[in-house]
Structure formats: C-alpha cells, structure tokens
Image 1: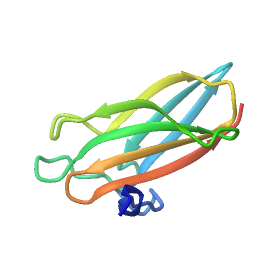
Image 2: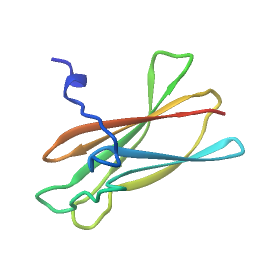
Image 3: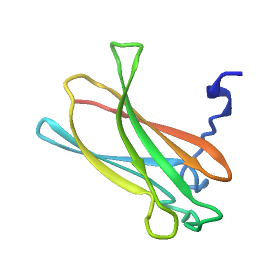
Image 4: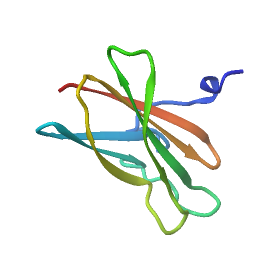
Length: 114
C-alpha cells in the first residue's frame, strides 16, 4: 500500500485534525500560516496531540511537489500553529499535512495566484 492511501482529509470546520492554510499576500511575498484545530480545538496533551505540520507547494506547470517547511510541536507547551514567509514566482497550490499521534496523517490544500 502507498502512504497516500492512509492520508485523511476533510473540512477543517468540522474536523479538528485537518490542517488549515491561511495566505496573506503582500507584494511578491506570501505569509502562509498553517494550524490545526482552528474551528474545533485539538487536544494538546501527551496522550493526544499534533506532532508536526509540513508545508508543500505544487506549481501548476510542474508535476512535482516541493517541500517548503516542517514544524515540530511539543505536547502541552505548544499550539499547532506556525507561519512562514515565502517568495513564489508561479501560481499553484499549497498543501499541508499534519500528524496526530492517535488519528494519523491528515492533509489539506489551498490554491494561490500571483
């Protein structure tokens, strides 16, 4: 089985594990914020927590996915939310994956334009 068969997705407004991607564009840069639990808070305990979030970009003119950032979180002391400033020269979509230590791997995507 391929790992893609284990990745879950959903609407972040109804599922607390789905990463949320928010984009704020200024001039030629994008401030991209990714979080888990925006609408429905995710537990942040040693027993149940978000371990990490990865951010990727998939350009419209390229079949490959580019890894942009990796954010690690410590249970109890951190909230699964991070941001990064990125300069992009082509349109495409951001893809975020998050990992819950109990419920596994989740993903979402958001299209952006220049």
